[in-house]
Amino acid sequence: MKRYAFLITLIFALLLTACTSSAPSPAAAASPVCPEKPAFNAEEQALADRCYEQMKERYPEFAAIPRELMQEWVSLGEYEEASFTFCIGGYKTDYECDYMTGPDAPEGIWELYGEEYAPLADRYLTEDELASLERMLTDSISGYVDEKRLGMEPSAGELHLFWTLEDGRLYANAEEIAYVTDETVGSYGCGGHAHVFARAAVDITGSGAKLTDLGASGS
Image: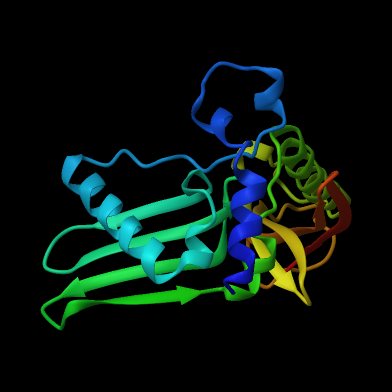
């Protein structure tokens, strides 16, 4: 896994300055979309920073991902916990590093998940690409809702988007709840509502992201 570390660091070295800037600029338009940062208090931030430094020593290939592209979570109490998750387009992947310490684990326990995502850790979406992806998924869901005469019109801001990886290819998936009406075509297993799923293949290269609409389905 360490073979990815240098490449990831090199690619992102000049791209992430705009992630923490609120002023719009041409550079910001092409920079990676970063996940929203939590509002940690001082004690929580100290735990996150301490665990991040330890994580860099233990998993350098994961730590090569810029911290701005990780979603962070911590918990204080009898058990201290921290989690760092790689995000694409601000949405979490399954590539995650977790830490826990407490009475049953005084030395601390580290775990790394989703290493199959490591080859994608130098990939990102720009704001324009993310907007296009969300619009594609939203349109797919809307088309299905209209076709089946269901009772909801989703919007991109309400998408429940999640990533999956199949045979090394990245897919964006979205789910919405639609309501059955008197005019609904077909039957759905949840009685008064239907689960509507949209899916798109996302191929990210150095020249940008290619999005392939794979349509929508319902259950």
